[in-house]
Length: 102
Image (cartoon, helix red, strand yellow):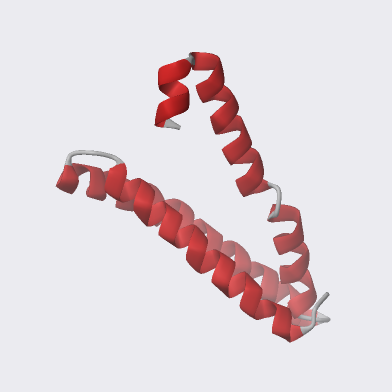
């Protein structure tokens, strides 16, 4: 992104658009997985827990980014931490293939 931003605003915008698309595209699949983990009455609990974890991430994520920026003075550490979270999410998702849901 920094190289694209130096080149032009249009390149930076396209870079951010591609990143957001790549990050949000799998949401439909993950939502379907959450719905298939529990069956019957347990499905309501499964979806509630899934949404609760997402809401905790929505609360703590911005706080953690702000804390890291304040401690380090730049966004580098916070962006690295977010990238690490994506890697952990990928590892967890690949582990769930063993469950045989799909």
